[in-house]
Length: 438
Ligand code: UGA
Image 1 (cartoon, protein in one colour):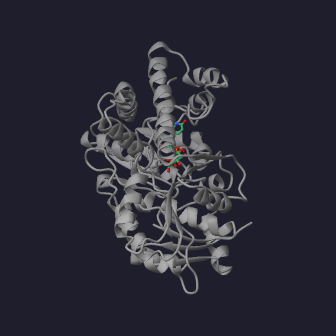
Image 2 (cartoon, rainbow, N blue to C red; image 1 turned 45 degrees about the vertical axis):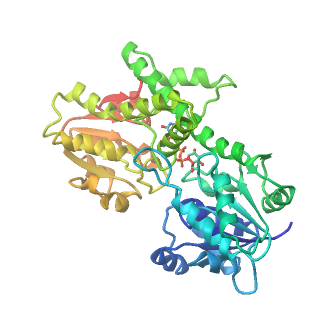
Image 3 (cartoon, rainbow, N blue to C red; image 1 turned 90 degrees about the vertical axis):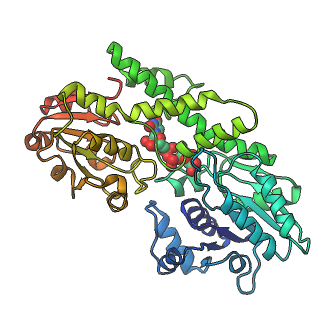
């Protein structure tokens, strides 16, 4: 297998996982980040994100001399005695107020790359971007590439889920390569040669659309089952049974049909918005995406509706939130449903207690979580509460001793926002139990 010299610009979630895993495959990688604080933490062996398996890979690859960190694109592209064959753009594309993606960081990196490449370089867009970004990157590079150094732009979207990102990288369902030349295709195939999974080679725009369409489709599946769950509650059906029955059809599949209090994270909400925005900008009103978003927003109010149904007024009640991260095995609080739920509850003068195995430090920093009492563990959290709301399905919470929780709560109401518990067991422990769509 050919070993390549790689520069990854942006050492955030996507860049750090991508760079580290490429080093794990045997390539020589320099991860770049302009944030000095983050860089010195990384150099000191401190990993800024919680991602299972990642610290071990970083430690091993650094020891083997295959993974380095640098402060600038110039340094990352031209480390001592080397030159990057491939440069990944993995910087953030945060949402603007109108829902479109802010691509200014991508543009700035493209300009830097253009000014610092010395020989043929494959420029890979890894950041999640709207269709036609590859064209803009290419135009930007040609504008600042005064010496006419040859290059190719490739779209190689990532399909990593937080919490399982390392596993996802090393065992991909597919590797998508949007290329413009056989030369770039050869390099990209070489880069991933040791990984299993099919390689899809296509044009740049199609590759860009695969990413946005995939995330939006997954979000659609979740909103669909959440809408079905609302109907189940109205007629007394069980959404778990419905989802099971649907999922056995191979054309539908069982995954991403888990109802809950809404999807969150930095990908689905933002990509859904950006996909809707770019479709409209291109002249197509992709209204299905708007409905997916609206259903998700409504779903977040499930907790409020249920508490009112069971306990009458929210004002003055104490509610315990188990879990804060947008999903288990991550400390990511970005667009976490817990934040919207906490805001809705505090507007109604609810006393909020909360706990999470890893996301508490991040949650404590958020202005939206001001006023929340953070607790060391689930029992401390539910003590004296009128309602326990399961927000994030961490395995620790699944093992909760419900009888013990029942004894220390003021009112034994359990709102299971992720259908984690066995309703019969919860009721046997003394709880009034409500699951989503049950
Ligand atoms: C998502 C995609 O799954 C990845 O393939 C993609 O690469 C990534 O976005 C990205 O674009 O970077 P991620 O946001 O880490 O990954 O998390 P998911 O596991 O997809 O979950 C997203 C949200 O949907 C969570 O809040 C989760 O609780 C919710 N969800 C998921 C449900 O409510 N029901 C389900 O059945 C599945």
